[in-house]
Length: 512
Image (cartoon, rainbow, N blue to C red):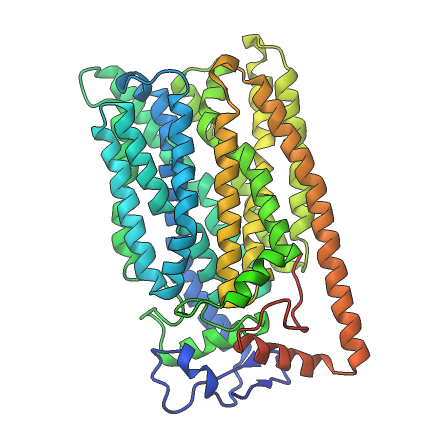
């Protein structure tokens, strides 16, 4: 394989040979010849990729969050009474979801790495949407538990799968912004869902003998998911899989990501590299990403399952809880898109936003624990809860670090699995710290959440220090070697095509 650095663009470009048919990018990587692409060509392909992938990934990720947290809205509208729940049975509906999610994580990641990621993800989306629809038919807690267990298995692939897709299409500088775009759907799609749920609730009140609101919620969100799964079958995938790029556009798409030094298509490898598996478990950066996911997921698990219940305890009706939650979602959208803009313009600013986000979150949850229970303070508590909800920023930006800071196909898959297992464990813990005996304020739980956020702040500081120091060490080694930056970038890209990891490739630099 040969590669060059374009003098006018400072970017590495690869091109297919005359025998490349555009269908097997991965096998063509060892037979490339010189080709220079202009910024206009690369931007045109990037725009086309954004047009096809970003709206679809946005909707899918948002639906995953709605499907996952729909049980919280259903609880407001009577699912507990209809299915005869008692004690902590509601807590266990959230816990069983993350338990099966966790155990299915590694085998599911193996599957999406081995086969066509677009088609595999589509199948999982269709199955989890069908599962959510079936909750409307449940008559008892046992049936709900079975469906939530299946839902956890089917949803576990989306996060890691999307990270692999992002890393195969976008440059390291673009990872954070693209990941935040589809992750902001948690709020954006939540607004649409909350409006629909509000109308389901009011309609059920006007017609008590009609379809219960909690059943309508399951049918609506699950049916929407099934419809999107059908659409994704024709669009979702990596450069090696999609039909909507020409041969030339596929080559340009691959050339754009050369500077990631992680190879190109991150899926389709049928051989597990055990050396990379071992390295993943020895890599401090991998454990920082994992610890970050664990600590942020504890409050996430509690808020996902009990957020609406906490808001109702402020003194609002169940319909008001839904409507008054919309400003909070808008606030999150504005915050996320501000970060998207800044991270796309300024290099290595992600962890600054991760740190800043934890300050209002810590203060908000701690103050929420201290404000008196009197209903006259309901708007004070609503405001505190609103500013605290940016606590999830390090979780989403941390996920983008998997794409940006991990090289090696097997290692990237293993690290993604580690992160999402930690995500599951954290969410399970979070759903269990809210105890029935502490209702309706759950003071012990909100204090616990504050403690997790405080610890997370210091973990982020140490993590950033480690990445900055490692980059400086590598920069010094490069300077001592006498190699020019251009030559180092070329060699680094070649090492990426050889499937070398970030620890093996001396030219790899970490984003922070």
